[in-house]
Length: 465
Ligand SMILES: [Zn+2]
Figure 1 (cartoon, rainbow, N blue to C red):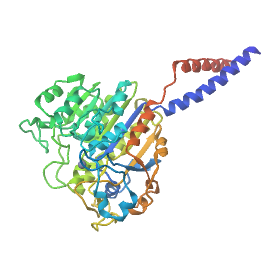
Figure 2 (cartoon, helix red, strand yellow):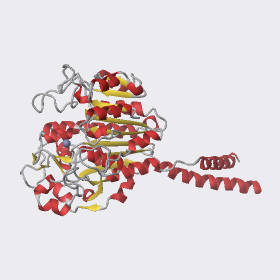
Figure 3 (cartoon, rainbow, N blue to C red):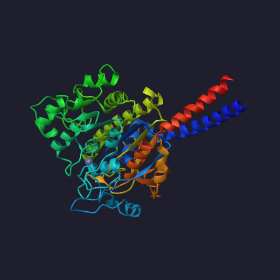
Figure 4 (cartoon, protein in one colour):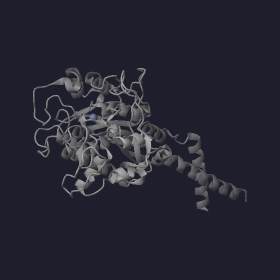
């Protein structure tokens, strides 16, 4: 009798601990994947959907909403203020005021702190900030930064760098080289022009020749790759590496800045974001502790700055394909990674171009001209705007975002013709809060694991009976 009690006790404890352990496991994100389409507004997204004839995969995620992108302002200039729905819909030009830049937007998302535009991981008092990715690296996780623009551009640079000047490529590149990043991929090759043609070296894109020699010399243990075939080999597993510095053979951006008409032939000597995404995950998922990565569709912003809708859509399609790959990767449970141990976030850092429907200067919806045809849309600015941007999340702790959806703009669904869910919004600093909460949730203590083991022993004994 005493023995039976003990067995039943063991069963109960085992069951309870199984439940507790399950909860802990469900809240613990082994991996965090942050995907940013730089400059993507709701109408960038809709324009691409109309062009392709189908919504992007992330639009069906159950956790979604809008996001405020305001910064602390500009050093010595304007003071940043959060998005104001009443002002937005009463004055068409309001959206063109007080917009963030990518450096401060990335700092807010990666550190939870709003700083001045053009500054990377510096507080408004000049102190250094530690990013979510740096903390993940210190926790033993593999970390990466991938972009379709030069790897030392604001959004990827902010994953680790710290400088008051986002254009200081010498400092940024040297900091990235010295950082704990396991994967760095992007454009930014000094020996190629924007059309992927070999030219006389111009080292300004990496700051100086010394930085370039460090990169190509496999500094800090990163294998240097540059050819399209090497990116593809890394993606399909025929090339193996633990740490990689991949600089595609093109200067400023993989495709967007190439010469020719909007629909001119693509550069053929470079990987796309999809290939870089596959390659990066293939390297990072070797770490048993998990990984944290930022993957950027960086040139959506550039195309929108140039008011080039065709190239913006092209860039957004590459971004969407990359998100689709990540979704497929997690659906398949690749290398043990799935929705129960991974948090995926898809968002933008700000809108660019004030893209609206065909009637300029008014809040009119863009029109669908069918698959393969550019939608009816007009850019109303060549710069960033302060409008809300979309965010989507799926996987471990994605539901935490619902507690941060405290902003309300009841006009969003009506003005854009989008889901009611986008009438609620978070702040860009909440990205950091959710990523950190997801990844820093306490893992089971050794004593709990021990008790769990004993409980399982009791369960096993009961079963053996
Ligand atoms: Zn921009």
